[in-house]
Image (tube, rainbow, N blue to C red; front, side):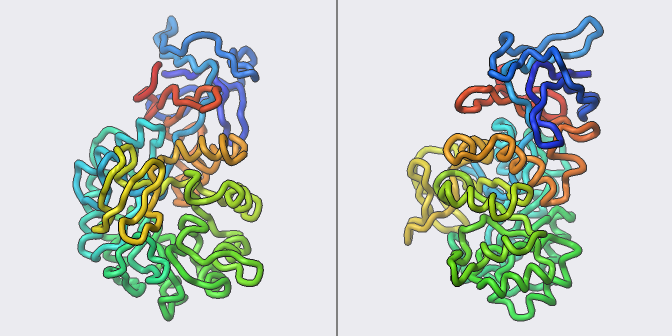
Length: 404
């Protein structure tokens, strides 16, 4: 058995408690209040964090001076360290999964680009094989397909040559290639006559998101009422919200069953707009994502995104032609920190939006997303300092990163 002691634990009630956490056979066991917990409210540490053993042979992880939160989950990102999941290679999946895990993102649902259907099938097939295999790094628990059923007007960095009208038969091909791992598929309803029939045909198999869409408020509401239940990177690649034309953002607000992703890298969405989204939609419906590209963790320079050249310069990544934002160079752990440090989002809210909310959004919350008995023992220890620096990552009950 493993015990995490001395830390301030984020509980399933979405609040922090001084608790002791037990881990048995890679899953969380009992979580008990600890009156003698030495990690006080002032964030002071009882001593250096370390791994020790009791007289009974139990391993003890001293989390003094740390917050203990569930393993983070990113349900929308493309790559890192020079790799993209759409490279369709085992190596790409391996390196991306290791990078994510080392940063505290212990479960991933990567996003695919708008590519030929046959190429997307290959990407999904290799990803499904990777997910079934023994490997280091994060668990691959799904796919979030931005394309190919998107808008020519709001395509962003997607390649419009491969945009298609929505088609249940194509969705079935994706589901078969991924062995059922496709969790979300994007849709621009305004470019797809009969979109309500399409949604009705596939909504029991996959989550329909409004993604890269130029839909007005009325069309977006029709799609949500037909069964769409997700919005890809709120504010970005969709109609703006104004007082006379509230667009997709207003439709999300008015449809209480819809979950909304948001990029909190400090580049894609202004802090005031992040706070507004949380107030409009409530913290239970918001999901922090990174939308990270292959240039994440890499030097400045030119990279490729779905066949299109992009340029990374500092915290920005833009299309070489036109200069549109192409995605982020952050990870969801840094987005969570940024939400707290620069956007005045409470820590509890930021943690919720990066753990249990994404797990619920893709229906994986029975296994992931909270420190609850019976769930996978994935956790992150964050120091109680101004930067919430990483102290350790625990995956399946074992420390895989940090300074323990």
